[in-house]
Amino acid sequence: MSQPVVAQSLVKRFGDFVAVDGIDFAIEPGETFAMLGPNGAGKTSTMRMVATISEPTSGELTILGLDARTDGPAIRNRLGVVPQEDHLDIELTVQENLMMYARYFGHSWSDARARAEELLEFAQLADRPTSLVEPLSGGMKRRLTIARALVNDPELVLLDEPTTGLDPQARQLLWDRLYELKERGISQLLTTHYMDEAEQLADRLVIMDGGKIVAHGSPSELIRTSVTKEVVELRLDGVSSDDLPDGLRTERLRQRTLVYTDDSAATMAQIRASGIEPTNVLIRRSTLEDVFLKLTGHELVD
Amino acid sequence: MTAVSARPRHPALLVVEHHYRRHKRAWSSIVATGIIGPVLTFIALGFGLGSQIDDTSSLGTEDYLTFVGPGVMAGTAIVQGGMDSLWRTFGMLKWDGTYKTVAFTPSTPAEIAGGHLIFIGLRVAVSSTLYLIVLLLAIGWTGPLALLSPFVAGLTASAMAALIAGYTSRAESEAGFSVLARLVVTPLFVFSGTFVSVETLPALLGWFIKVTPGYHGIELTRGLINDSLSLGGGLGHLIVLLAWVGVGAAATTAGFRKTLSA
View 1 (tube, rainbow over the protein chains, first blue to last red):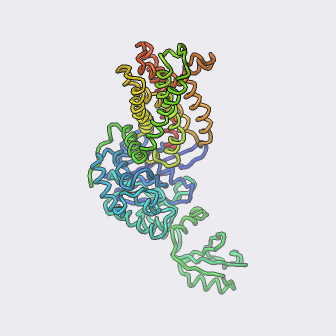
View 2: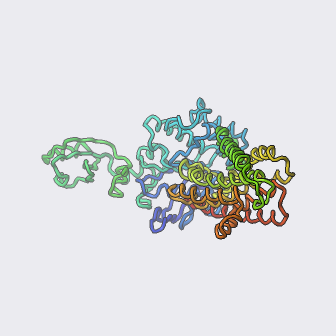
View 3: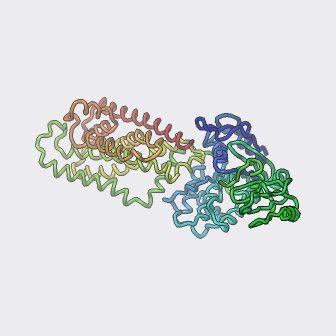
């Protein structure tokens, strides 16, 4: 099986603004591939090009072996898209939303009904087929949107910020659905600005900033190669981080100072020995957010 | 899992089906706006005002009833086509994102725009058919050509819809829509020959009106219902109407493409 997505020197410009600046990446069959970055990093613009909604300004983009510029309808016939906003049809019931969408992919109405019933089970909405969309919770709407993206048995599913705005329980439920898709061998391209989401779901990821890819690899690889094992977060009221002992790898944020270390106990002992007593100390393992911070010099969620 | 079918053959018709399914729950209000309004207008003007008009020589019909009856049918098509292209079209493109979702399917912006315009025309054709029944009950059977008039009304609505959707589909906001409704749609309804002959209008206004699709829609509808058309005249009106549909559809398609591909 060929790679579902291959992007080479991909560029998207809107007037003078360069949203995507010459990126290269490829997704392997059955892989969950994430694009991680803050708002404005170019994730959604890339996603829209892969969805063949927006034409690349330059570069090459091959989706499911077809040219994104010339084969849009044929590509979309094999894609599932979960956009940032649900855009569910509020005039239709839950089931009708799926059925009507299935019609656009060539399913007969009766086939669409069977398909919808199957997908409502998957989305854990089998008890709400005749409900209108409006009364559904945010998590339910999101699951329905994911179900809608599966009506055509897609080979590749695009998920643009799939859990933004959901509470932790709804996020977990949605992640479970995405794991299930992965188990079925469906390739997924995911954008998110939640580092825990990328760590949980992605086999590989790229970190984007300012339209460029600044790092790529598996989550654990990126953490291992880019930052230390642990991070000590300090609140230093009335003390400058410049006063910390020399030799420490630090990053100063608005409210906190981060100290990168492989031995947090030894680092804390060293700080206290220099006469500094932080107001608050938090010791944690390094995350993708630290990778992002180190690579770009600014925080991930802005 | 069921295997997915090949790409649908007529994606524009799926947009029509989508509208039909969306409208199923609101049929009563659609009937009210599409039928009851025009019928009441026809009764009020045809029987009310018409009873005060003795000289109909400038109208080209036997009486005011047979002049205003067909006029109201096509005039309503102007209004429905025009109004459907304002907030409703903008809403489906921008507010509720219905068409943004459809754009993720194999359908192209041109097919979505085409289906949108076809539905507007069909809806008006259906309501015009019901209106025609009432009209023919009032004025009597005029001939088989009258049966074509709902299609002309639908075409008139599609032409108006296409022209206005060419603008609204690329608009950034709905700020100018009220002005469009008041200064374009309503005047075209009033002055295109719905209630009085265009020949009675000031020359410049009359000349302008004769370029618009509404005028040709009204003249063709009236000619078909009253069986008063020459073949050349009828074809002329039809060609102009179709040309406007073509121009408008091209503008609407460009607008849909711009908005859905942004």
